[in-house]
Amino acid sequence: MNASSDYQKLRAHLAFLRMTAAAEALPALLEQAAKDKLTSQAFLERLLAVEVGAVDERRRASLERFASLPSPFTLADFDFSAQPSVDPRLIADLGTLRFIDDATNVLLIGPPGVGKTMLAVGLGHAAVTAADLAARCHRAALEGRWATTMRFYAGPRLLIIDEVGYLPLPAEAAAALFQVVSQRYLKGSIALTTNLGIASWGKVFNDDPMIAAAMLDRLLHRSVVLNIDGDSYRMRSHRARAEATRRAVAST
Ligand code: ADP
Ligand code: MG
Figure 1 (cartoon, rainbow, N blue to C red):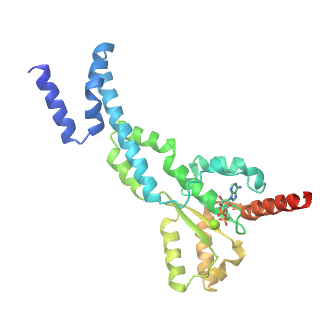
Figure 2 (cartoon, rainbow, N blue to C red):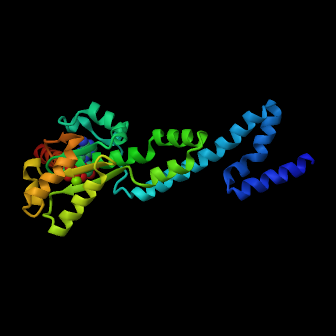
Figure 3 (cartoon, protein in one colour):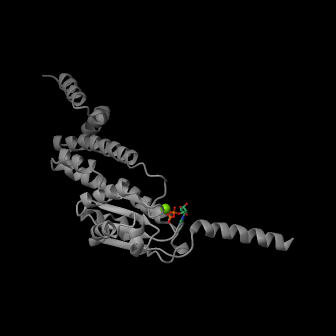
């Protein structure tokens, strides 16, 4: 057996296993390994790390597509000075995504325009992009739990339900929403935004206070509730523009 036929076989194995990133990196890594006099272990580690990195990146991109979040905002884009009722430390803590580990829910309650959707979407992006995710996948690969970990991530770990309460839900829709909340209860986190205080949830559910109470019971059992009040961010920039126009007009 000579080196060149070993090399050909190695290429064939990588192709068969569809490890395209490793296959591509192979010649350069072999050269580097010879130069650095790497042990076979160290070489193998470098080769597999290339493939793990590529799979991680594909995984992240497909999660991002699957999440189909409506806007690019991340938590870092949130202007806390404009919304003093939102505690930056609480958001930073939620941003670590520890809440997902024990299926805690996040309820964002407040009037229109205060940033409920923005924060929920920011959490969604955090869930997709978290370095935490990459680290877990990497660990899983090292420990031989790749397949199970991938199945695990296939089911969304955070479900965002935006804008509950703006429109009353017909009975079937209320039942479906209740079903989703019950199925995820203690299994998967929900971030839910609503303009209605908890006391008025009966109204959303077709004036069915029972279903509203049952749903709230599950949502709140393990949850973080953010009551955001204050001015609409949209109105705020609108007011600032109006103010600037007024001043401009006054000074002429
Ligand atoms: P809500 O869901 O509470 O009605 P949104 O999250 O849709 O409000 O926010 C309305 C608009 O104002 C969005 O364009 C959002 O990006 C912006 N916005 C709201 N609050 C902030 C904030 N604190 N910092 C930056 N942008 C904000
Ligand atoms: Mg909204």
